[in-house]
Image 1 (cartoon, helix red, strand yellow):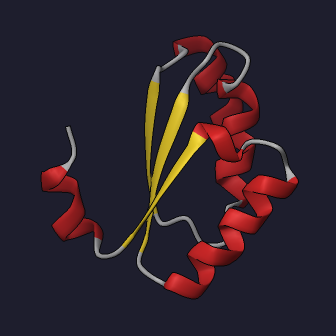
Image 2: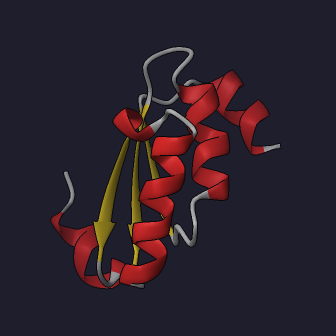
Image 3: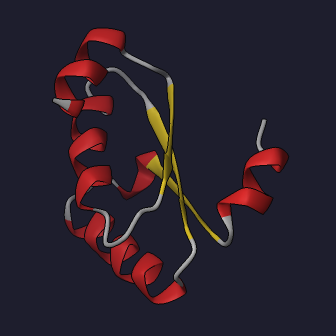
Length: 80
């Protein structure tokens, strides 16, 4: 469903809160790369973020994804 919504709306920037190991992020990135979209994802757990980054590289979508490690409540107000 998320892929369909992204395909329809074609957002240039996507914000994901809670990366975990990146499964959903990869799914979104595979659609976003069709039109040049980018994803910023925030993950509190550093170990999960590191695994997600490995998964992004393996799925060949790492260049589309910015990973921010930390508390989303503190990070979101600093984003443009």
